[in-house]
Structures are given as structure tokens and as C-alpha cells.
Length: 339
Image (cartoon, rainbow, N blue to C red):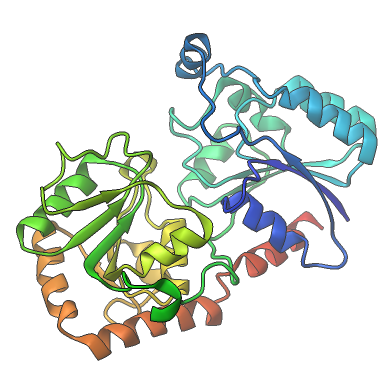
């Protein structure tokens, strides 16, 4: 089976992790098509306005590149990973070339206004399979005309997301009480500030330091630039406990970060949801909280229980492997659906 995989394949991205997983299967040939913009790319005012209007510019000429690659390699599957510019007419042209199955993969809450473009919305009836990681998107996608929406679970990379020793991490191994890596949201900021007010030592690795800034954060909090790939893995080890906040704007009930932290055997605190509880056992494989007061109380308890905290992290990692949450397991399942 030949799969043309089109997505943001920069090193450390979840798209590149999925491609790497597909490549592990001998019966699968993967042809990569990278639409990632170079780091530091600045969009023009016109491009930003078009994005706000949900008619994004095809800056990288993805539609043309996709048609040309399909004509050259004639794949069995064309899989589009989260691109917002592929048009319905492009998909129709691709079908005329070699009649491949057209597959879309969305790691986001694709039915939210900030995650869907007009080209993507118009193309929804054209996809043979539409993979989503959001349970609530399944009925929404059906209602929008998608023929076969399928739920695929969040995952971790079995090579990248593994534990590190104090020697590998260096002098900052567990030098903070709490660590968080991720983008800014008001609720996250409020919770982190409440923890700092309670006296915890906290480090935050944020997106470009853009909306994370010292004016919003308690003065004791250490704020650092974003990290990816190996540095992302290393920095989760800088806290004794990892904070796993959900993305409210995406209606998250579980997140990719949940799996990655657990697979690294980092003991973590996560917002209590039915999906978190379905994947990890509260109190044994992760610690759930429902509000800031409960979060503060639980952090105080777990930070003085060194052995139990380590066992919590190890149990989470064991659950990841026993329940088959890896990118390899998810890829195997997707291949079965594609067949």
C-alpha cells in the first residue's frame, strides 16, 4: 500500500511521528509531502486577514504540489494531515488521476470556527475516511456530510517519549515543584498563579513567550521559551510534578500531552474528565483535579510523597504500553481501517 502523506513534517511534530510510525510497517510505502512553513515565517497583513476570514492563502502552493505528487507516484492513499487550504476541486482532480482513497486526519477540534477553513468545510463530503481524535466531532462531522468519520486515540512516540535519568537531564532534574509546557489560556494562567501564590516553585515553557508574559504571571514563576522534540522531553523532567491542562478553546477532554507525559513516566496532575479516567486510573496512574483549591491540596500531598510519586509515573507509563497508546498501535489500527 502506497500512502502519500501531506502535512507539517517538521522535526518533533506529531505529524512526523505518525509518518515514522507508518514507515515501520513493511507492507506500507510512505511518500512524504511536507507543507511546514519555515520557523520564523512572517505572514503579510493580507494573509492574516484571509486567515481571519477563514479563506487562507495557499502560500506554499499545496494544491499544485499535491496534484503533481499524485501524478508522479500514483498512491493508493492520499492522507492530508490538518491542512486548511486543500480545495474540493483539487480532490476531484486527484481522483481523476488514479482514484486513490482520500483520507483526512485532524488532531484538533475541527468543527470549531478557529480550526476550520471554508476550503476544508466545502471538502468534507469528498473524504473517504476522516480521522479525528475528538469524540464529540464524530456526530458533528456526520451532520456536516462526512461519509466515514472515525475516532482515533491520542498517542505517544515510543522512542521520543521515554523516561530520562537525572544524569541525562542535567542539574535541573526535578529542580522545580511543577512544570508546564504549552500555550497560554486564561484558565491555565489563573491556575498556575494560584499555585505560585500557594508557594510552589514553577517553570512554564510557553509559545514564543507571546501571550505568556511576566505581567500576567506571579513574579516567582520562571518563564522560558517553547521547546520541542528532545528538549520538550527533557524539560518535562524539570518538575517533580507535571501539569496537564486541557485546551478549553478546543473543548478538550484528553490531549496528546496526556499520553506524552505519561509515557515519559512523569507523575502528572490533569483535569478530571471521563476520557482521562477511561485512559488512566485516578490516584494510581494520574491525579485528577476539578478546581484550583483541589489542585493546590493535591500538589501539597504528592510533593512530599517521593516514592508514591515515582510509582505514579511508572504506573502511567506501564498503562500506556499495556493499553497500546503508542503511535505504532494507532498507525496499525488506521491501516486496518484503510484496508
